Length: 300
Image (cartoon, rainbow, N blue to C red):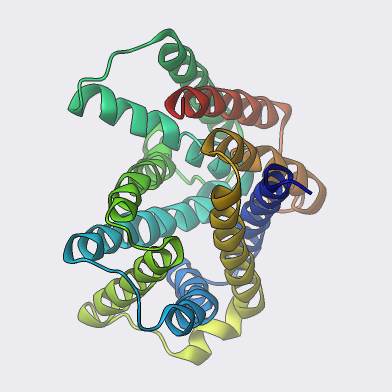
């Protein structure tokens, strides 16, 4: 079996893991909180990523001062900020609505490149931006007309949380890429990112005196958060292993299909928790197509 086919299989497994994570977090936040969810997922990442990587690569970690800094930055942006906002959005508006908006992350990376790096706006950029924007508008109008947990807040304000999450997810790869250019192994960089995020998040909770006990974390929705942590760790391994074997232009578009999987699973399993409408499915499809177009163009 060729490396390409193995990479495709791993990318598909990663997309499934992302979808399951969103579903587990959605169920868990019915009784638990976002902070608890992130703590359990980070604990899983430490146990199954940081510990084995530390042992396997010892003592040749090949970490420079610069790569250490950028991987720490990746952990703060892509794990603490992006993931906490992502979980909060799932809690507020549901998994089927959050996942498509989160998948607009190539849009944010493209906009940053256009305005900060002065990259030209090509037809592919423009088409992808139009499709993603259209999908987000569809999600916004669907939220407004639905009975989701939106209280009295406007749909524009509600969209800020998942869009900000997508922004932080979108800029994280830039830090990671800089770290890899220093020669740091892929999994060592991943371990630094996870460890930095965990220390940073725990330090913040300690500073604001909101550090929960283990019992309080697990008693409400512990089993769902543990499940989310396991599939999130599975995604990390599947995603990076796929990138090692197959081109980015193949792996990333496959992973980007996770919103459609979330919408499908939510329709089957979460109908009593959130309404998955045809408009939600259409919006997910439009955003996925736009994200794939931008990703394919950006990787050529």
